[in-house]
Length: 234
Ligand SMILES: Nc1ncnc2c1ncn2[C@@H]1O[C@H](COP(=O)(O)OP(=O)(O)OP(=O)(O)O)[C@@H](O)[C@H]1O
Ligand SMILES: [Mg+2]
Image 1: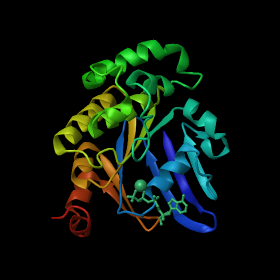
Image 2: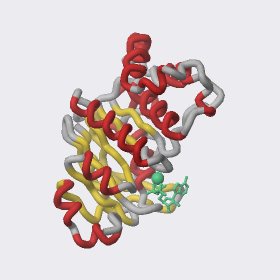
Image 3: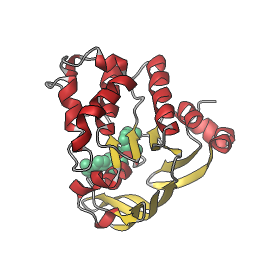
């Protein structure tokens, strides 16, 4: 479903990504691991159209996203849960969710979708009118995921959703991702929390200094000596 081919990009003249090739098949959960500054968020930005690729291709269901204008990319089926959540703190939970329904395809179903998200995250449904900025970090992460789901994506990109959250909350959120995946959502999960991410995903890639330096099934990556030392703290 998602094919990234020899993607190169950066900021100004500073190159960050070098010939990144990766894919997510229909129904998969794939994780992208890598240390701070590796270029993970840069890749997410290039996939969501915030950042233009310098060269290479991004295909979603055979549609070339590099030739698609950014505001139309969400309509094509990708939704992003950005690093740091980026919820609107002065708006209510419900209004934050409604912002996620901006694309033409999803907008007509927004009422049903809000209800569905309240079923997925009961914590949010207890806080419908609360200002998003006054919620806990975990609740804000749930809201960021809910907002992305409002766009009715077929592929969800999450940029370090576990950052700063207690293990029990991470477990809860990953459980929801697993459920959504079983219902057909494909997922690309950017994480530094390698063990949890590999336990959830079927396979993964390792990005270092803007290059893919490793890939394999979760089992293979969990068993890799070098990875175990670098990321797994084992
Ligand atoms: N807006 C920007 N302008 C210029 N350089 C940037 C910008 N954003 C990121 N960079 C640089 O690009 C490189 C990769 O950053 P990026 O945020 O993609 O890494 P990351 O893997 O997401 O790291 P982290 O785990 O800390 O989020 C870094 O050297 C960073 O300084
Ligand atoms: Mg990042």
